[in-house]
Image (cartoon, rainbow, N blue to C red; front, top):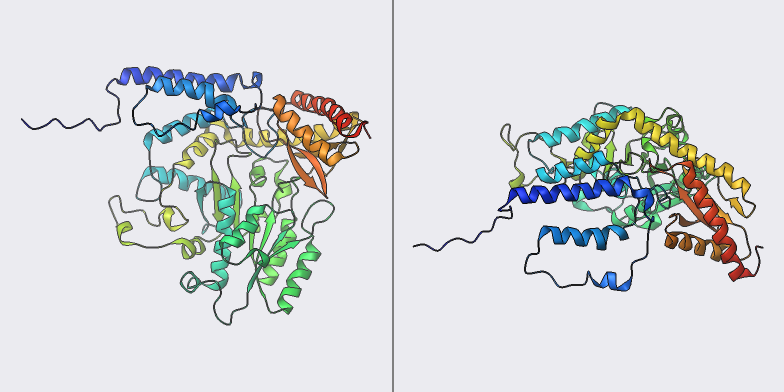
Length: 488
């Protein structure tokens, strides 16, 4: 009698029990979302709690309900809780029940969206078409879901580099003999991923010119023109200018129309980092601030910020698909295409970006857009900007607090007034975080350490602002007495 083969399937022997446990797990996450306001925003992790996750690789199985219990008691309470309405430290969306359920469907399907002729790719292509129309890009435009705008911005620099040097630069490299070195331009307030992209591209960070900003934290257009002229006179080749639709520190919007005009005049690739603000096009009150974004050659944005899609869901949009193909397509034998069968449907997403293995990010985005609609999502965005203006106004009622930057969008930078203010305000932020009351962040504005509140979450209301300001005032007074002996 032949030996019995071992059971190597990961499917359960009792599907009914799995369904029951799955219902409990889903209910726990609905309870978490429904009651999130009653939870601390964040709480510190004790050493023994960290140590519990230093255990050796498991060789034997444990029951699903036991693993779930550990998750509920040892993981969930100690997450960063960016879904909480008083998480205002960084520009991170709050997610939604619809997005969570869509993510579950995508995981169950387990589709690889690197390519092949499958309906999940049509869902992604649908969103590409929607974004093309939203940003008034031509019919030649193409796009791709990626992890986030750091990747999308890297892709923008790569496409611009390939456009400047030609597709053969992928073989010959970025420093062909006799060619002028490439230089790019971004505001001094641009996200650090732009600098990193220049590094990864092999061009070097010294090839990125950091353009000064005006008193509204926007790229100074005259300075941009002067830097380009100086580089050309020095025998360098300007090839790229990056505008920002919502800067990371203050939410400032660059003058995209003027940047686009210079880009056209100087034959530069015009890329827009719209990670924070690009989806403001869905709001009639915010869209006018984005005038000129339709002139971009490429655009980075995040659905997991203002779009409230669960992490991660970044997006790259380019005006002409041919530029994307010239930069990323790498035909290989085992990815052969055919006119029919599963090998049909070319070009594939793997021709348009880095990844061959890709998750179904488009599904949770499609569900979010379909189930909430752009009117409601746009209203959420307008609401977060209104909250920022409300906070700006209410700061005036606190003599110990002062506004430190213009409020252009949905970010408020402020601080507690006192001697040694830089050290005190950094401590206030840590105190607020550890208290569980609220999570703002620390940043630097014009050389000063400030408290930064970024309103992105659809759950945040005006009462959350009051709690944050009252706690900041009280903690600031306590901290300042320890540091300074007075309130300054």
